[in-house]
Amino acid sequence: MIPKIRTGTGGTYGLVRYLFGPGKRDEHTDQHVVASWNSFAPDPGRNPHHTIAQLAAQLDQPVKAVGDRAPTNTIWHCSVRADPGDRHLDDNDWANIARRIVHATGLAPEGDTAACRWVAVRHADDHIHIAATLVRQDGRLAGLSFDRRKAQAEARRIEKDYGLRQLTPGDGTAAKTPTSQERFKAERTGRTDTPRETLREAVRQAVAGAASEEEFFSRLREAGLRVKLRHAPSGDTLGYNVALPGDRNRDSEPVWFAGSTLAPDLSLPRIRRRLTDGPVDTAPPRTGASGADRSAPARHRRDAAGVAERAASVLDEGSDEAAAQLVGAGELLDALAQTSPAANRAELRDAARAFERATRSHVRAENTDIRALRSAARGIVHAGTALGRGEDGGATAMVLSTLVLVTLAAARWHSARGHAQQAAASRQAADHLRAAYRQTAANPLRTMRDMGKALPEPERRRHEATIWATLGEPETSTDSGAARRYDALAATLAEAEKAGHDPKALLEEATSRRELETARNNNDVLVWRIRRIADLPALPGKPKTGTTSTQPAPRHADMPAAARSANDPRRPTPRR
Image 1 (spheres, rainbow, N blue to C red):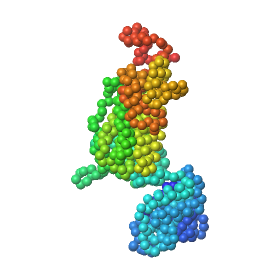
Image 2: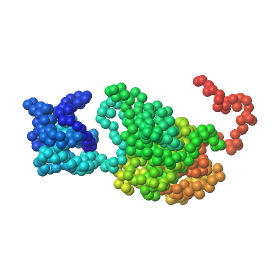
Image 3: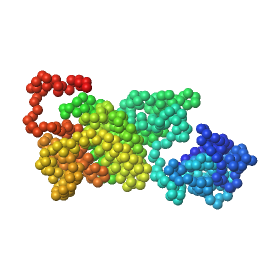
Image 4: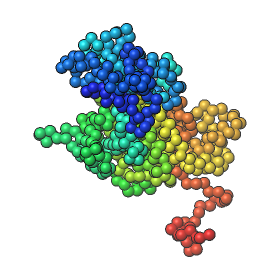
């Protein structure tokens, strides 16, 4: 149940007319009063002899009686909306809910006959509107300190008492939600998101890994946003406003949003503080191939996986300094969301949006260095869009596997501090990351499982024995399914052994990095961790089948001309 409070000036006639009117899109039906300050207020919806003017006049009477002593804001308007999945509430339920809200906020305490006048109007099944005036009937002004916080707290109690969906309590650090007018405008213009939401995401992505204030503003403009800077008389930049091209008000002027109105941490002073933890390398990373013949997106994703794993370890330690790691992890998600293949970009965008809530709380980390996280985000952004296949796809699966653990560690960190909304957001981000991971990792893991199945029986059993000894599985197990689930891990150990590593030592190192209890698939976590530690390709070559020869394949130069032509990857595929 969500109460939303607004205040206004003037009389209540305009508000009451709207509540009893058809709505902006004829969405109001069966408009009627369910409760009021004296239980006898005029009801223009049910009594044909009552008028909107009569009801507004009775509400405004205490305000007019005090004359010039009336406050600037005289109207108090609170909408109370049930969750779409909640059970049906009848008029009596809504009347009791309205009385509890006005009592909890101090607008009309129970038994106070001289309190403010108010009326609760219902014109839809799922919500009511409470309209009130802010001058008491005894001429005193209403005391409404912390009314929004009190209304939210009472809503949580109402949810419990009525068996409704219980929302997580907030702490005042959430970004401002779009208004109903903004949502209606988005629907009219065919937008999926409101301009506020689109701009918030664009600003987050622009600041991800930015090395300087100038680069941040440059990224905003490159993203196609309109940018307006606010300057002091000295010429110093005080703040910034952004607008979407084509988004204009009724006067045909751009609709500007200040960074601080998009989210608390997107104000220019807060962004400047984040930029002080700038990337270690302020120059854009090179985008050429490395000595290992990996693409730039693949290299930077592998690097980011290691950095993210260290951030998860800091979160597991549970100190307040870990709060900064959440900000850095959010930048990593924003960087991946804007550079990932189209196939999983939607899930990563949803993960980044959800985790944004987890990056903000009242916990402040003053002495934590997050330059490594910001450098990793910068590297991913500058490396460009990754392919959804090959080494790029494998490296993306590698970093997503690690970020799932980061978001789960974030959920535990927030839960330990009673941050219900942030913990829920972290778990939601983990769900989106798991979905993106399953899609990205399917092909690389299938290849590795095929390689594990193709291992010679003695070698496969040797690696399985190593796995069981390290992970605690019994060596005498005869369950073929238990053995086969280690195919990808056995193939990775075999590949690492051929590269000169000790499989047992490598597996022990991988398992000691951090706990695996929260991972849904320990094998996947270990596979990617070992491949990164041993610097193995994220996507190994497919196993050769159909031959038992152990002779090395002939070099390209030694092949006959016809064979070289047939094996030339540049040769066009014949038509069938």
